[in-house]
Image (cartoon, rainbow, N blue to C red; front, side):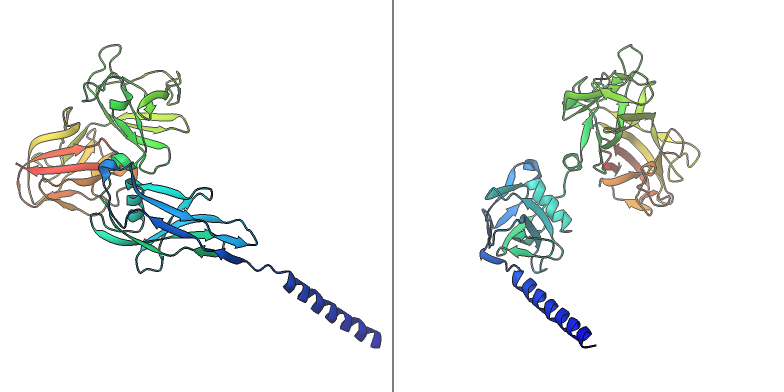
Length: 373
């Protein structure tokens, strides 16, 4: 019994000694030199016309630690007075001491912070140096007053070009990637979609197109020669089967495409022909939009837009019925793209003759304008 007690006592003493040694072995990290962050302006009005130019330039100094440890730098942005909750971040290199952010980058930061465009807001900024998931060190906070803008969807969504022999008649230039209709990627996932208008396919070279990127020919793709919806680099020209508007989808990374005709019209009990027939749009190559120059609309009914006298593709509000204001453009949504909830329609508050214009050049922001004549 005494031996058992002695063994137990030795075990307790050994555990105590090891525990003390482990405590002694723990590293104490000292922040021997704090980081710093400065900026060249304290106020900025962001400008979309120079979206790619530098708006603010930051200068920073890394912290130092004893002992030396690895860390990562980010710059945090937040609305002043919110204690950086929520915040958005930008990664910063360890081997430099300055970086710039463009008007577009800063505008995207304001959007991520849910700040309304065209209003000045005090934004707090600090350098965050993270040693690990739980240990971070911060510079002193600086404040910049920023005013954002409503972004142009043509600039913020990725796109590919659709050059072809049809493009000149559509208001662009034949076989010129930098001056051709575009397919956009609303989800920014390398999947593109959109519309092109082809006036004729009568001649051998009429109604042909390919897909290009970055407004130039290097990296272009065409049909792989099987006419089965597959594309390859420097592939064959694709020829439309008939004249009209085409809805095209391209998966750039999977090298696939699809093309279906989609000629739109307006229908509804607010229109002269009710739900019995459509009044068709006409493409205007000068404005690059689809137009009904004059149609009588009642203020007691509704209307929506559909393709090919069918209901597979419809342009509608995103959710509930929407009353349109004369001359004011609104975003419209296509049901087959999964952006519409329910089966909403459009209305006008005042009966009369109207011009209706659909701008389909950007699939990330289809635009509808109804103007009372």
